Length: 297
Image (cartoon, rainbow, N blue to C red; front, side, top):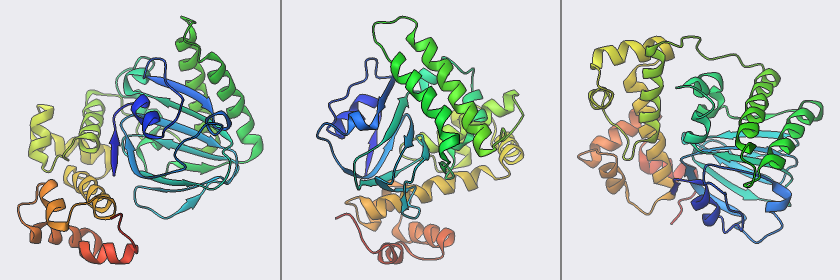
């Protein structure tokens, strides 16, 4: 289980010869990446930046957020953010394109939380899409423009890249038929996304509504009303989903025992952690490990 904060640390982890000029953005063809020695599989990695991949063949098997095993097909679009844990295994030579960018890079192009509002597939378990060749063609053309603009010597390159990336994402929305999740652009919507990022990026995870409200400088009651109205879920439900996802990942991929995992997730006693896990999944942590068929030991 690995949490990697930035692009260059991730590329180094993959043993890749590629290197981002600024550590805020990189664009490359997967065929070029595949020419050099690198890791051909990774087990349970979360990056604290954003990744887009257009995979042109069935070269990769992957699991996202402890879900089911999937195999890429031509053409598979994947959108990954700090919300996602990913394991993957490369089956054959890669084809396609990859773009990776930091929160600060995208916020230069999108005011406040508009990026998260307009492109919610970055913050969803429904983040991979199979499209046809006709739909993929304009995306690949835009991807080539982005890759060609990735030039450290051009002062205007970043502006072009942001514009092309924006058009790319808008075209994706049109292809997959996705509208904005919420039309509210008020201060409440900003606060909701601050809460969402806090829940999904804090280490260790925030465990209480009161703790989250304190960090956001609002009352728990106001936080409850905002989150419930804009998401349909309560703040506690969203917090529990993050804690559960973290628990499932650690049970399968960490070297800690069940008691140590519970302690890491701020449960005072092992029975408290077991009860929490069973209430949300219907099975105990030990049974979850057994049903999964393996543990990375």
